Length: 49
Image (cartoon, rainbow, N blue to C red; front, side):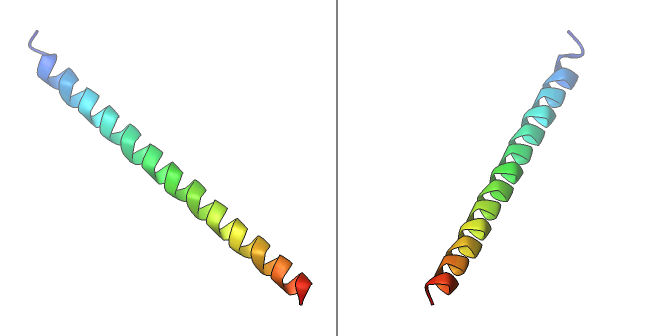
């Protein structure tokens, strides 16, 4: 029972790390999608011209 506080801190650290990691991953994926769409649209635009 004396280790309850330590395991709670560990769970908070794991949850915090997972949250930050997933947010970071979502930001990277969204950035890649936006960049790819921007590049793709530019190529189509140049093809039309």
